[in-house]
Image (cartoon, rainbow, N blue to C red; front, side):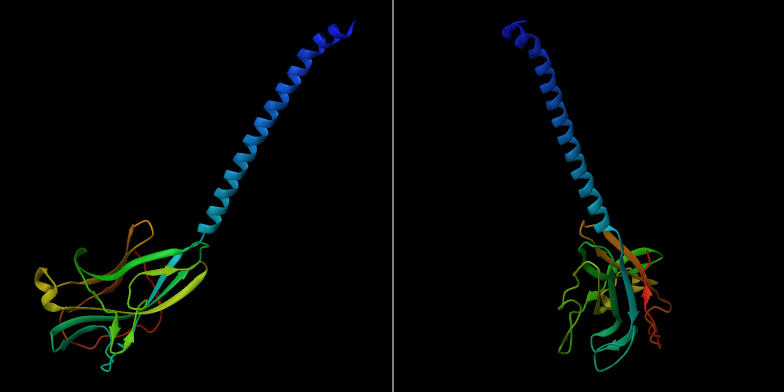
Length: 203
């Protein structure tokens, strides 16, 4: 067999080998891409693993009157107030957002209106430097003084309500609503009891 015949015989073998190598390269690349995507997904799931929990504790006001929650006669008329500590616990590896945390009045589980977010009491700035939106770092716990109030004349639907809920929007603008307190004897001035311990907010 001369050289020309040898080259002609080996050419199909070489072409088949090259095709096989190209296929193996494509398959290897595809597997590498899938592996990278899987790694990113697993990492993302690990980062998001955990919870955002909010604990509340109703306390005394920071003003000189030192009242707790309830109904009080003030110079602007009869008002309802809730002085509140909140503790936000982020056990995930990702940043969590709480936007526009506020207290809402309810009657028979129907939403009536929101309360007023107080950002300053005397010379003390409360909440998040006066704001009621919070960015919670991963694996962290943050505590804030909050205070919500509303005048009786500003409450619609005959001014009567029987429950207060806390609500906020998360990073995806999804509204989260939690039970805060039941209200008996609406607009009746009487002694109310503050919380002795922290309570986890539940929906």
